[in-house]
Length: 322
Image (tube, rainbow, N blue to C red):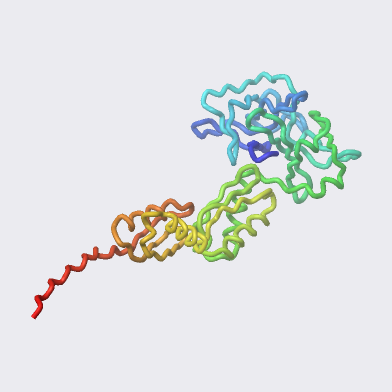
């Protein structure tokens, strides 16, 4: 999956809500075009759970086209004007818990189907979420290149059981965000060191940005995030105060109008303080303007003193010769 691809992943059992926040049902499966391997519909269950063991309650199942739904970190939202239908469209129904996932050359199921991932742009199937284990039920995302034959009761894999040993644990973006926040909180860093750090999770990839006090603190936060099971990658854009002070000083040096000012830069979690002297008001304003344009600066406080204008020395009158 390239960096430009936006992945939508839904675990079966996720809540489906209407635009006004009312619970409408739960995701129970997906309807796939088997020829093109594209997800076309979400199967949404309403009412009691099951008609019987392994039998989908067809009479209580509705089908919502992908354009009618919005995938969110903690569930699915029916868009305004969405019209799910009770009539089942054509295609292959992959249903929660009833579809077994079998590795190449194996007979026993490796796990049971628990969700699906697809491209936001066209619904192209990117993988399946599989649950395995009876006591510790871990979830894994098997990417599309591992999928062989698709069937309502059985999905066969191109990989042997030994090849699946390194498959990473899967978590939804909402679950992953909660786990990452807990990891940052439990990293052992003082509150002030981590208070200015922000994060977002998309497709299992974590983006960190904001401010922290020191470079070691920034590295410890990244290490704590990378250790969270299910994190695929980390983009660390956090700026520490020493790094920011250097960046602001370089910006002042590049600013022509502020070059005659003598300024000391100090930062505390992105709040920059400028102290020093400037020959005139324009140079002081230029320094503040240049500092405010540096990425990572949250505010600028100026304590620059403007030196009084020096008047030219008045020529002394010549004394008449005695």
